[in-house]
Image (cartoon, rainbow, N blue to C red; front, top):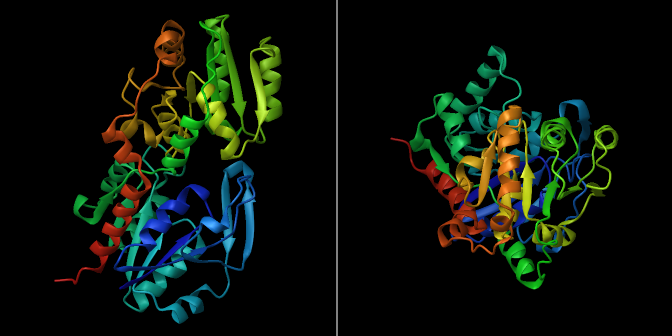
Length: 375
């Protein structure tokens, strides 16, 4: 058995099925440590009964910096916990936490194998100066193998000199089985014929691109549409004021935060999910939409887009920073409402790509890759 420790920022409900599948592997003995139970900007519920793997939420001091969209975690005693656990392999889910560097130091000191679960892309990296690039490069060169969120994050690793043979390229995902079952159970009540029913799901922060979306809708000046916004965040007041200024109060509805049990009905009713992010490591709501038979307008800056979106088939790709591109994509939606409302079946190849078991196999492959004897 490969005694494996995974260290993650927080308990993310969408990761639980993947962790469970990794733990069920015949040669993997998994323990998961979370630097914090839940960061301050997250409102999701956690079903602890679903967590069939060993886990622990580490004691520590935590601060979420809203303007940087970044959590700081200090976990005293982590090094000594590592010594006591004595894992064969350590996996970290990034490089930008003190605990991740402590675990790297431990791994090098005691000759343990080190795996990085990497999601960022060249587009989503917010700090790109020479010093930070050197820090990332040092961290990456110290790892034995990698598992990625998708193709774009693999290309990011290539940029830092990591060869393909050290990577297990996976596809970031959610429990698509849950959303598919809910879609079958919830009878879709598509809005009246001709009405374009748009949906946004996410935090109300600048990088999510809602300002650019509202501006595009104002420029197009179409009549027969409605946009439901699911989520909360520091920009909510600003966005509501923008909607009021454009006279869109009856068309743009702020619905607040919804748990996943509530979200399925919104996805089933929507003609198109809008993901106009300016920066987005992945964009898991796209996975949820695709298995809910909902078309997606996806930003070219989202990691999910290149792997899952087939332009003008299951979605349309736009550049939210280019008003002409955004307007063209939005106009395409208005011109093709009947296509958006049509019933489409998810392809078997896409289903397999999105399945949590497939992603778990990629993580297991990275663990085994790291554990191979060195020559």
